[in-house]
Image 1 (cartoon, rainbow, N blue to C red):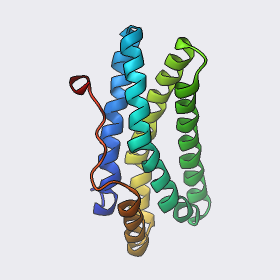
Image 2 (spheres, rainbow, N blue to C red; image 1 turned 90 degrees about the horizontal axis):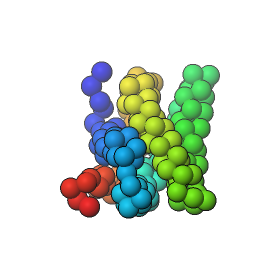
Image 3 (cartoon, rainbow, N blue to C red; image 1 turned 90 degrees about the vertical axis):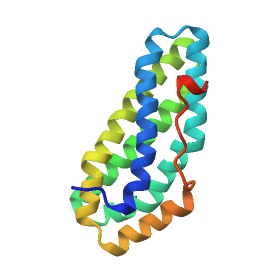
Image 4 (cartoon, rainbow, N blue to C red; image 1 turned 135 degrees about the horizontal axis):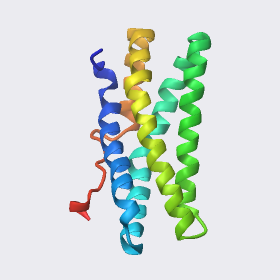
Length: 162
């Protein structure tokens, strides 16, 4: 199913988040202390500028609309909320971990969770939204995204921009 125009803004954010997940997967295993620290700092900046507002916008615009659709909606809303919370917990450990190893393990976990979460949203949740939310609900959700998110997605920093 083609992506509804009112969800495209979220999909554009997802692209940049997948770039970050891939960066973590590729760079962290071979990173020395300096490169690992730079990747952690890039991740924390991207979280604050892009991912955290994205999650807050999704929660505000979608959770109650999804949950209102009965048992299937409640299960999807529960998964969305749980995965957002897991991402927040992992990033908290990346930020406040007690040592180099703890922070790197948390970053690895964060990257894995982020990639899996976005793939689920794009493949399953957005398809479900497009077939279960009516035109008014999709428009209202899109209006929420427009007011809570920057006009253009925040790009993930890459090695070339460091």
